[in-house]
Image 1 (cartoon, rainbow, N blue to C red):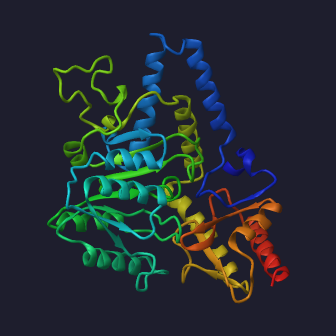
Image 2 (image 1 turned 180 degrees about the horizontal axis):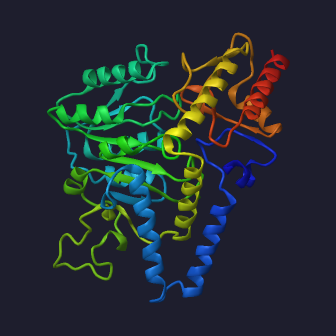
Length: 400
């Protein structure tokens, strides 16, 4: 089992996969082997370049296959933020245009959109998805409510919609393919940027990634890969209409030269959003982790295991006096967010995290909305859930 290959899971009860997943020993070995091979070949020799190219191409191809897009639409990145921001700033958006961003986006993406709006004199509007009418415990209702809200808040000037695939705070899944289709019917044909930080490695992503204009993800969370490596799937429209932003030699068709005689020396495909030197050995580690995940079952099978565990955890937490799950029904994936009833305890979320951490049980607290979040994974088991719930119950009883 994957769990047995992760030394970070030994001696602790871990629920922070949405922040960072554990790195399996075989993936660490793959990274070390790759690093040694590069040094054996010589880090900057004619012998090393075929090896480096093979590593890059095989990683790009694997991530593209998972995303359901051809390799030329997949750019490698360092993390979700760079995967979102580099293409975002290259979009053909102009003064007076509108950005529609959901009220459940990560601060890193929100800040990037606000700065883009400031510099280009754009209007930023909010798409409310946190407190949708109904739909918090039924995916079909959620989908319908999101599309209804989208229709209500779109304007003729909307040129960009920003919406996560899995909301990092509530754990709800957004109907990305349906949103993309609705935007195509809209007169403004707004671009769709999707933060997929909580998606890759947890749920099937191919339909959403192929439909979005920018679908950015990382390998270090649910995929249990190394930090410092991710990717972004880009639409053909982005490749045709966008410009590079942060520019380096990897952005260029010919990395050896940039000439005044060539005003557009950049790759025509997704590589225009890759910048410069990055850590090649991490690619072997991520591919290894993704292959290990595949051995746990296909994406849909893994999601079903994760969902059953999260449903079990949601139910157990619902039965604890003083705990209020954020969703009305079981989550559709592995993010289980809940609040503490302030009428029955003065224990703050951060204090609960510390108390659990003292017992080597790891969850996290979130600020918006103020809550606690525990993530179930294919590495999780029933005993993990029992330990967490018992510890929360004990903390509330002793701090009533």
